[in-house]
Image 1: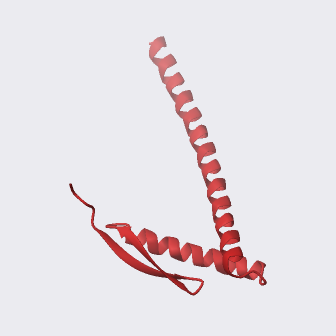
Image 2: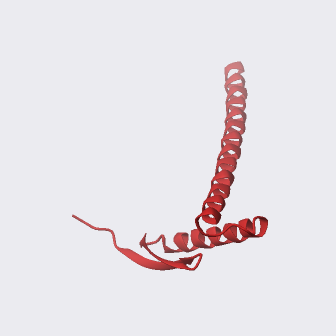
Amino acid sequence: MTVAAESIKVVSILGNDYSIKAPVGEEQTLLDATHMLKVALAETKRKYPSLIGDKLLVLAALNLCSRQIELQQQHRQALDRYQEQVNATVDVISRTIANN
């Protein structure tokens, strides 16, 4: 049985340190996600200065999730448009071949 090597990274969020295992090759993703969360926390804190602790963290997380959902919807719409374009191109090619 092969066990994938993992490294432990310590990240600090809202003054608390968290030791998180990151699979080999994904350490930078963990660090980028930590940075993204810290930025979201700072933005949320600016908008709602009275929030602290878990409430701040939950609202920031919900904002990130909301952004992710919006991006997924935009991605799905773009894929649908591309699929329509591909289908139209295939139809034109099929008709051109059939006419020759």
